[in-house]
Length: 163
Image (cartoon, rainbow, N blue to C red; front, side, top):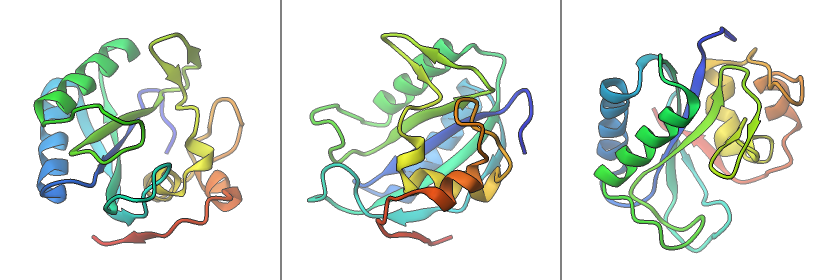
């Protein structure tokens, strides 16, 4: 549900031991960023953007944090690096990807950070796990719930719950 402290992150992995990397990411986020409030199931999803790469595992988590949005971004980038993320190609294969989807109801567009994440509405692999744990969370720009955005999403890529 929507609450003043809701911060939603998307975890994704398509290289290495995907489940272990995502577990490590959750643990480091809980240690360095904020308290884990809820987590979606894990979904196996087709790649988005660059299709010729392994399938992803994706999960949305909700955290509560005292950190500001820029600090959250800095910490999640550090966690990606710590877990072996190297940025070669946009939308390419990666050990871990952590996206800051929503920081409460903040709307921000700077060179470093855009909130909410600008492509949520176009990505079934983000909306399915988000709608699972926060179906009534309202997108602060579109004024629609996560469930409404999922129902209206035109992305037809395969997104399958695995656990």
